[in-house]
Image 1: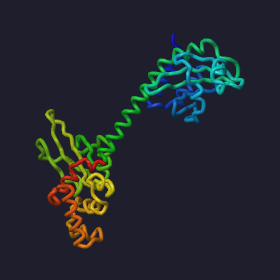
Image 2 (image 1 turned 90 degrees about the vertical axis):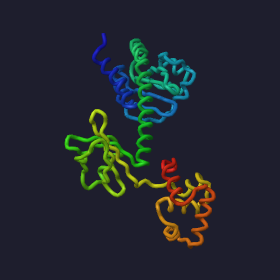
Image 3 (image 1 turned 60 degrees about the vertical axis):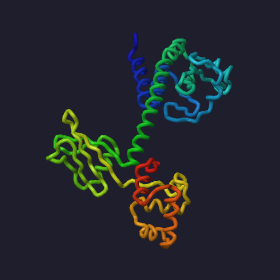
Image 4 (image 1 turned 120 degrees about the vertical axis):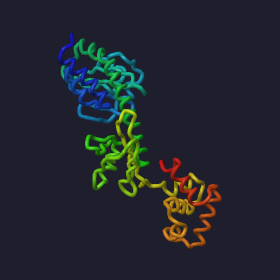
Length: 301
């Protein structure tokens, strides 16, 4: 029969995984359950105890020990001398991780661990490995979500739904930021049928769409997105840095005369750069240049 303390420990293990690898609370519960003074979770790159991250100092000394087997303090001292040398008793078990190996160590300064403690650590190993796997999956999902948000922020796109009053409610951080910039909260057009495009600001549009079941969603799109640096443009388009600076200004809609003024160039130099740009890129005119820049993956870099 599982005791309340064992149930609490299993919950803390599962929660550590769901929290993406918040190991200190779980280590506190493990140390309390085993009446240990100290508990550590070691990986090849990071290590934790009950208080947070700690220096990873003994992981390499555990190399060569079998995984899934509970080692006593005496065995650890014999096989990995760096782990011994004091009056404490220890238990350690190697855990399989998605990318490598982890070790759970518990230490007791006074007295010795009981046989049941080793059995408990052995029984917890599958739950610990599952928590580690869950944490890795959540970390991967979090990373991908962050990348998706970064891309959405780069192109200035956010999604909204609408409440009963017809006001947009953000579905993501980008939409929340774009709505926060408005002086007045917009509402759905009263005469909207299937689709409507609403200009909220000179550089911010809201596209409203009614789905087959009547639900209305919206897409916010900002045109205030920065272009790549001249250095990136020069490398991507095989231009000189001076030509890339000219490309950047022309892509923002400036005329050749305006571009020359912004860059401090003479009209003759600006025309020369312009001819070089179109000759090297094979583009025909400023409209073609703007289309090439703004519709390519360059704006995402």
